[in-house]
Every structure is written in structure tokens, then in C-alpha cells.
Length: 98
Image 1 (tube, rainbow, N blue to C red):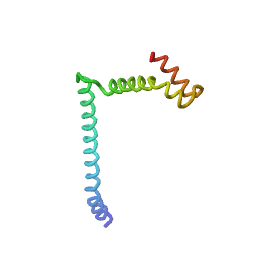
Image 2 (tube, rainbow, N blue to C red; image 1 turned 90 degrees about the vertical axis):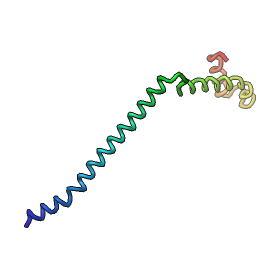
Image 3 (cartoon, rainbow, N blue to C red; image 1 turned 135 degrees about the vertical axis):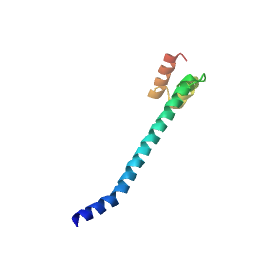
Image 4 (cartoon, rainbow, N blue to C red; image 1 turned 180 degrees about the vertical axis):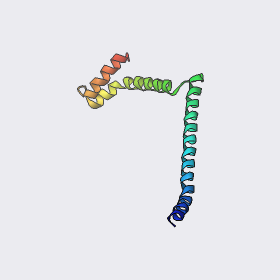
């Protein structure tokens, strides 16, 4: 009687366990496909003749720095000549050559 109960219990519990294993295998495949897509996108960006995001951000950073250095007199008038932020702005602009 105990053996029959164990057999019935194992038959009832086997399908959900198999289904869980199959679902996890599918998620692994999906995860690796996503990773492959990201790798392919990175490789395509390396091969493209256009600017990458790093070059774009460097260019926009230099543009912002140039614009802020052009307005350093306005910052000095607004915050005062002895404000540490103004002094640092003047040092950074002098180092950058603006």
C-alpha cells in the first residue's frame, strides 16, 4: 500500500518538476540570445563610420566647457570673486586654454 502511494505521488509530482526544468532552459536560451544581440550591436558600432557615443559625449562635453568658460565673468559677477566655485572655474578654464 505504501509503495502504491509513493508511485502515485511521484507520478503526480513529476510533470511540474519537468515543466520547471524546461522553463529554466528556455530562459537560459533567451538570456544568451539577448547577450548575443548586445554583442552584435557593439560590434556593429565599432565597424560603423559614424561617431560612437563616447566621441559624441566628449564633443558635447568640450562644447559645454567652452560655453561655461565664455560665461566665467558672469559667474564671477553673480557669486563673487572669492567664491571657491568661481576660483575653480577660472583654474579649470585656464588649464583647458579657454
